[in-house]
Image 1 (tube, one colour):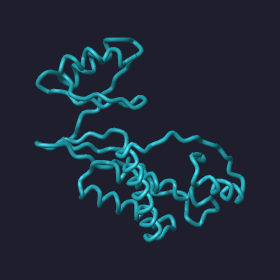
Image 2: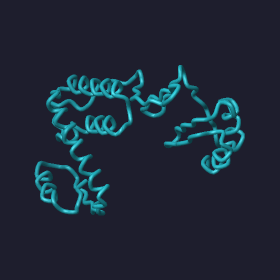
Image 3: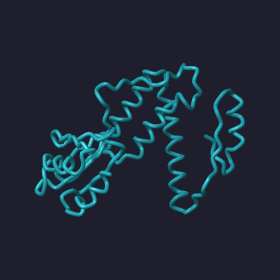
Image 4: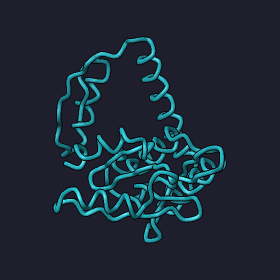
Length: 197
């Protein structure tokens, strides 16, 4: 519903950027044309079911989801944001979980790191956080470096397929994990057009 009200506002050129993820909204606006207070009043005055609370940037910085967005005079820089309550606990490497599940958090962290347009300083900082978290949960640096290399290879291959127009629609098959034999069965599909979930 909020999106239908936003269309006119975007056309007014008061805002430069608007995006929404579930209930979190990021708006970049022209401070010469509007203010945070005016934006909140505008949103809240449209419908009784919409309650808009704004978070103002602090020292040129605002946090949106897991991003730290820093406004510089000539550019905007991104970094990874973690709440103060964040712990560095993931599934421990000595756990009895399948390796895919033990690696899942690190796979997410590495994909986010390699696909975000962040500065080298922020990249290095985030990579150190990933390595420290992995170390604290029983993973070796070599294991995480191998995982990163495998992910980079997969992303590069997907990018090449996309740029060459080679992407094809794949079928999906679901298997409920309940034993070691499932891994063997899913391995049979590795060279087919069937992806296994």
